[in-house]
Length: 302
Image (cartoon, rainbow, N blue to C red; front, top):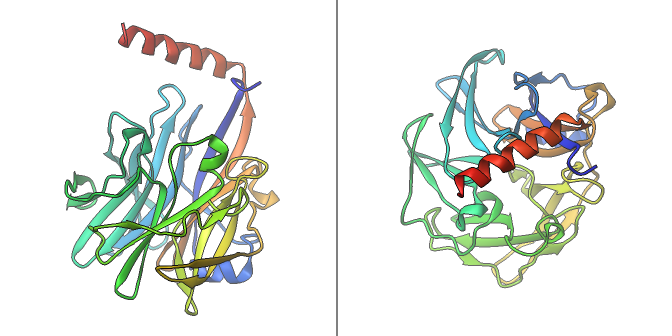
């Protein structure tokens, strides 16, 4: 049954700020503008957004089960959330996902998850939004998974899940690092892991500050990967200790059917919120796709 199972994600936009959604504690009843369907055995996930020139630029992981290597694509929408453009913007020989977009002064950066490369890489926009160059002097201590940065005062923080260990560990552990500059040098927090909790540890979107409180969306992976969003309030943030408290979960409503099997990102982009939802399908075609992919890999490896 494992080869038959296929997780398909769908990316959408809610025309409400993330603070409103966190205050409501639900997305029930809120209209969603969905990005285009990608066809069989393809999906868009992990949306992060930035407004530029009155246009919303949404960066997503584009994934195809035929090669199982995520790439970063970008969608441009106007204020009415009408789609204007889309194009690929970043690919590497390894899997890319979770493309966090960051403004720091006049510079714009992209911080995608790429732990299979053995490092966390930061890219700077040479020509926004589709030309990016790796920042070679950015050195993060580990190949962080789902790195989620936040500037608090004059210090930068990155919350992440550590690489290595079992899949359960990668869904259960929350670590942090801090630096005086986005470019580092970065120091791992001495209290890592900050949490060991499969229902509220792995980051799932942008940390935000609401009424002076830091709230980090995390994934509930207790029943399925990315089953729901658990907002995690940081009640104490210091260089010696970090304390957190999980809040009520946010789940996909029944009106999103069939995409009701998971919700694993919640990202703020000004006055809109980006998210993705999952449906789990089972199809015999998945076996043929997987066998073909493995055959191509054997041929490449000689």
